[in-house]
Structure formats: C-alpha cells, structure tokens
Image (cartoon, rainbow, N blue to C red; front, side, top):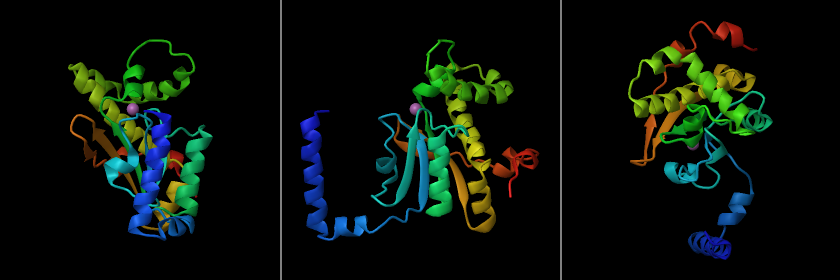
Length: 208
Ligand code: CO
C-alpha cells in the first residue's frame, strides 16, 4: 500500500461523504454514541468495521494480537472502562478468527521473545481446556477449537471486570463471543452459554 495513495484515498472518501451529506463531518465531530464495543485481532485481514458494516460512530474498537483481554493490559482495561461505563455501550463483542497467527504461535514451542508473555495467556487457555483440546486428533480442528475457546476465555476475562458486572446488573448489557471465518468471510456467533461457562466461578470474581 502506497502512502501517497492513502492520502488520495482519504480525500476521495472526504469528497464522497460531503457529496452525500454536507454536514457529515460536522455531525461526526459533535460526539459519539456507539452501541457496541468490539475487541478483535490486529490481523490486517480482519477489519472490524468492514466485516460488520459499521459506520464511523457506531463501534468503539480495540484490536490487539489474538483479541486478548488481559487484566494487566492498561489499554484493554481503559477501553472497557470507557466504552462500558462512560459511553454505555450495550454490547461487548470479542471476535476471534480462524487462521489466527497469535493462536497458532501459542500452539508451538518457539521462543518469540517479547511476544512470549502475550502468547502465554493463550497457552493458559490451552491448559484450562487441555482435556477437550487433547481429545481432538485433527490438528486443524484443534487449532480452530483453540481459537473459539480463546474467544470464550477472553469473554470471561471481560466479565471479571467491575465495569461489565455493573453494566450487566444495571442495564440490558450483553457479552458476545464471535469468530470470523476468513475462508468464507462469515461471522459466526459462538452462542456461548455464559451461565454454564461461569458456573461455580463467579463467587470468586464477583465484584460490587
Ligand atoms: Co489473529
């Protein structure tokens, strides 16, 4: 992608928006009231807005390697706090994707330096679900299942935050776990049964 072309594309986009609505940027500058917080992978193929058909102003977004929600990650904790407790989004989406390089790297034993602590959180997901994952013989299928279980565990990590627990208690707030299938472009709702997933552990993480 050519840098000069990016600025040309930007000007074309500005012209296109103003052609449809002369007040487009004036309205956009007035403030935001997004309905959803989307946490997805930094992978260049999994563009948050494009896959959801979201327009500027509609989705608050965080992307990092393998769509992680780490409680020591000040960025993720700040994004969740601001989106959930200040902007008051009613949907928190964690979206993983099949073919995720971060998840793949966590299935291998290679020392990746600074990436090690980040990927270790995915290894922890593997450890939590070792029994199920080790029972899957097909490597590709196991990889896909780890992508899904990683989404599930990152949803659980989001639910461990006070912001999400308070939003869930006080209003109609939902956490969603999704996966994008890069091979088809389709978004898949994992329909995670949080009552089942959280059974017996919320007494540990419950905050009020
Ligand atoms: Co990825």
